[in-house]
Amino acid sequence: MKFAKISQTLALWAGSPKTFFGAIILIIIWGMSGPIFGFNDTWQLIINTSTTIITFLMVFLIQNTQNRDTDILHLKIDELIRATKEAQNAMLGLESLDLKQLEALRKQYRSMGESETLALDGLAPQSKTKPNWNQC
Image 1 (cartoon, helix red, strand yellow):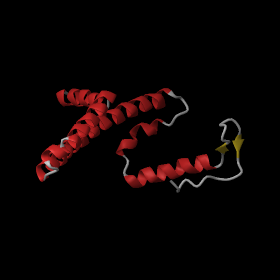
Image 2: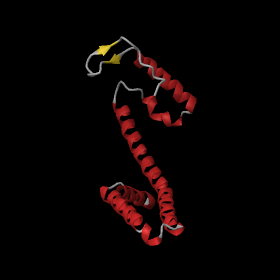
Image 3: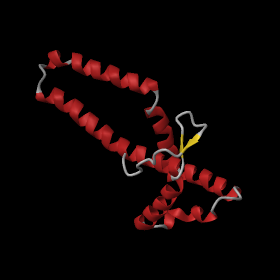
Image 4: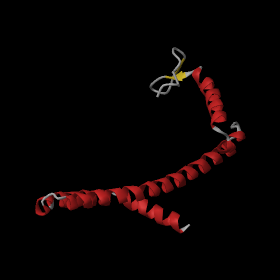
């Protein structure tokens, strides 16, 4: 639990405008120090090593917070499915399905939605053309 709390705090800090502007200031200071150090290899190595280490650590931080956010979202959606009488409660266990089963379920829901499309204003249903769900 300590790691989750630390990563959540770091993610909030890392995503703040103050941190972003602080990073910009550090880069400007580093760039302005180039002429002082003659733009030598050590001067370049400092920024390369720093950014590599920070990026490496941020990958784990972002993944941890993304996993947490996804879990929270799943729980909220699970509760909505459970509380809705018309919903299929079988949807609560989708995490246990393999990729082929998920794709078959996705095709089933696509075919249900292809018979009607909404107008751009979102109010009046149309049935002129079917959307191509296979395009991104």
